Image (tube, rainbow, N blue to C red; front, side, top):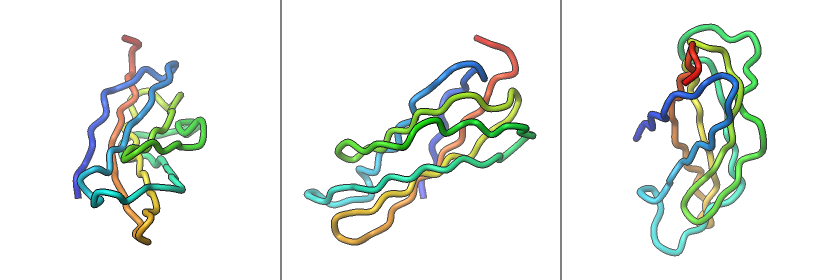
Length: 102
């Protein structure tokens, strides 16, 4: 399983996370029904307003807009998709929220 490390984001900004499933699918397979969740991996969160909109899929990639979060917290973000050949695929990434703005 590959792990994605996303660049840190300020708490007051939005960032689009990209999960690329290209290495997990065969040519001709399509992705659908993307679902992304976020949980606290390290630190504390008093709001967990990280997932802002439904995830979208384009080709082999799932896109998720995230915003907010608690400064000093690292979130584990997991994307799950269904494939046209009946598989359920998962990619996981980590995104830290900065304590100070950039």
